[in-house]
Length: 348
View (cartoon, rainbow, N blue to C red):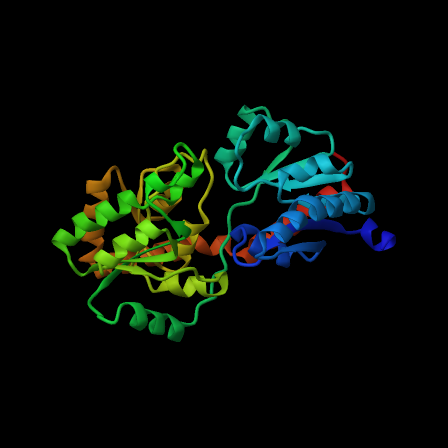
């Protein structure tokens, strides 16, 4: 074990039975120079808590005595070891604790997803080297026959125009903590925009791929144009996205420069996008793959416009797919492997 570990890199993390971070679900299995230690987190909350809060930290500390370099996807692990660390930070919170951990002397490098996040981290006081490797997407993981079957199942009328959104759960803003990042999952604005758009084009229907709250379920029960698809595992998700005619991004929360895997998935599946004017939408607009809305009324107008123009949808979809190709996880994981190899052989 010791001889093997001298030339290897270790990663350890909790692995949920149902849903995991999309970036790490795709990236970690592709890193051939990383030994992976999964701590599987079961449904039973007590056992899940023991494994997450006790067993996982013990495992990380033990790996820190065996490996010269750890690859961390949770910044809290930095303080658990003396070994050198490369820390991937896809969703920074910019807290005092986070910034302090990223500046510890055992941090070889921090990796984040956009130049804007790097800039914001540096302005927040991070002095460790910061690399940028963008979000990726698993292009090509789509069975056309399965896409057609999904479409027939949930929208049997071929004249319907499917507006789609996928996320872990759907709630009304009143159901979520005020001021919390969880507000990104609120669908109030989207439902308002859909109701306005359907006044002009009743062929528009909304697919929600994820777990609805009780209030969202009640709303859907009274509005048959809302189709609750439910949670779908990642292996099937891209086929559902490919069945959309229009993908939506109704978030208005400032994520401080983070990029969105969701938008990249829409683009990779040739699905045009309508979203509010947030930083994440810039890449979509630059690619010519979507429309930015300033408010609910213009969001509804964009849905009406795209819904009535299949040629525009096709054109935007093609441009989006072209822009997504360089972000294939097979390509990005090669870049990541080279970066990790570099830091495993060089002192900070």
